[in-house]
Length: 116
Length: 112
Image (cartoon, rainbow over all chains, first blue to last red; front, top):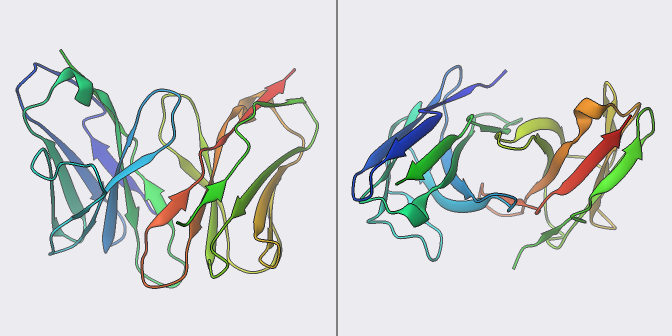
């Protein structure tokens, strides 16, 4: 089945630093990847959609200069949280859409970011 | 605005019972429908996908789709305490966008 690997699973960083989160599709080529953020007991919030080789499309209210997304290959997308602040602390999850007729949306295991 | 609605619950069922989770969507042209399970602190896990009207069964899970009424449901037979989680309904709408729309999820509690 489709597997998406996300790293790191947990990260604690100091306020003002940057954090990079990686999302890899291991056994399929992901034409489109999605980045979500989820606060405790709340629903998934789509942050941005990225297509391989092109710029990401950000949802309204998401700062593109703060949340840098790179999707340089069909198997790797990265999200960099720049100049992180405590309010950026959240659960970040990537999702990938595979190719083919029966595509599904497969989620990575998520990254718990804590900014102190 | 494309919307996917789910009752937030919690839905509480006894062990061994059938749990019925429902989802309605606003975009009549929606084509693809997915059910995900999310345990607390974990990422969503795909349980079922369904694309055509009718029922689709996979083990203890049955997804039911009725495009005319714009609802999709998930039945869990012989519910187990390990099924206790939040169940997310996702819908891919019509058109060229591949962005799925997620419901807010229904919390299911299966008590022994």
